[in-house]
Figure 1: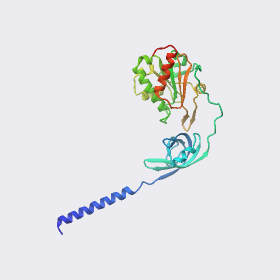
Figure 2: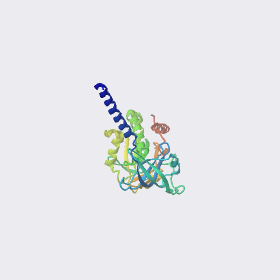
Figure 3: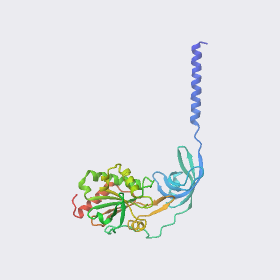
Figure 4: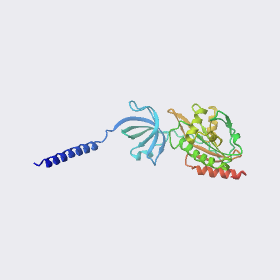
Length: 295
């Protein structure tokens, strides 16, 4: 046989072997690992077909923590409600993971009727006191004459649609205030922590610089970060319709954002996170004009 033909046949054979080996390797799916799982439902994202679950420790896999899990099949998701206790299997196919065989082991206890106060337009905001990011005492009366946009957060919050979203929205408003001194003269931002045991002044200051993407102390002329005394937190939470409950090392909570007029009265209250920075700017501008301030 011609040496050249022998070489070509050998080369073709080697290529065939390599391709066959590669194909076999790709055809082998990674093995799925399954772990028994128990936890409590914190919130549900129907659009993403997932739920945030405060999970118990899984021996040999992970410590107790709250995190987001895809739920399969998606038809299981409507059967879940925040507060439900569940059992399931965590299926891990690196790098993906999800929950299967989800069973509700205990339904959430319904909240007693009329236990949550709903802030209403015209309500006078009491002179609540706080300590701000500079360790200085402040109270609601210090902001009389300005529209105050107040929201509630805690710095350890891990859930993107909760505190990080509120802080991101306020950061957008702050950018507008920084660019428009006339607007900043009439509007003040206040982020209040409901985690007084952890969120000391220095923690709030570091958090402020992080979410505002600046280290310029001038930030605090427009946007303050403050925390009340633990003893004062229940009455503040009750007034602003805030529900916060320590659970699993984190805090399960709702969202509460309020527009307060220059006269110290509530203009509008937002429950949840379905608002844009433009909504609050519009509300604040209208409140300032109504009280005789020109913006």
